[in-house]
Image 1: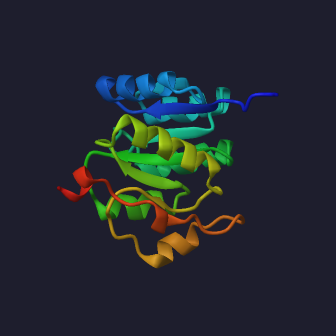
Image 2: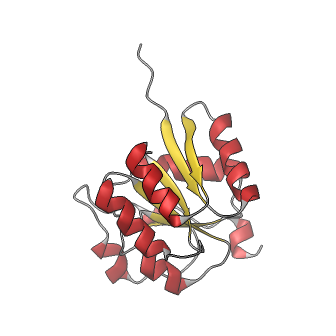
Length: 168
């Protein structure tokens, strides 16, 4: 029986510890792999064009370019790539910028390894440009509906914030 191809992830974060932690999760999973990692927005876009990953985990605080601009740049070259924005903070204004740009989701960096792997798998299955709301940040319905691909809405109600995200 043929095996499913592995989901290839690109990590774009200027923090080496974050890149290493995500790489470790990807490498420890049978169905995930690290395609590459980048430390700058320009490098992330270039790497996506050279070796397209399935999912990009994009730090929302990279220097020199907004996460929305990076997302648009990635999609201009490779529209099928799913972008999940990463943040250390719950900031509605950042989410409102990156989702309309085509990110399929947003997550806080403090998720567990199992949650991270699940988010990558879910993002990979999501129709392009849908809203995957992992963090407990209110996202206006207009943003969610404007980011629904032809495959229909992503079931955001099935994803709940973790206890750590709720502050419990």
